[in-house]
Amino acid sequence: MGFIDQQGYEAISSVAEDTKISLDAEKFVEATNLWGKTEYAVEVETNFGVDFYNVLTKIKSLDEKNQYLKGEF
Image (tube, rainbow, N blue to C red; front, top):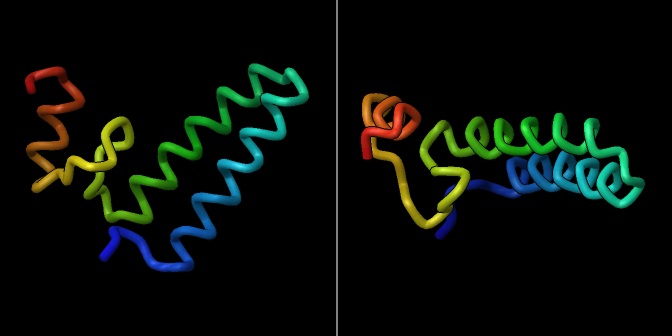
């Protein structure tokens, strides 16, 4: 059982691959921007239910996510 379906996996993989290509080409500013898009893709494809930095931690609610983002965890 996973947090995403095949379509979500492909969406995340696509932007992650773009990030890798930019990084390998030493386009660091572009890679950083794409990394942000990768993070957002993970959040969107999991309906904001998975912590990008710890994919094993499921975020239970929007309030919990906001607390996490504020550093209140």
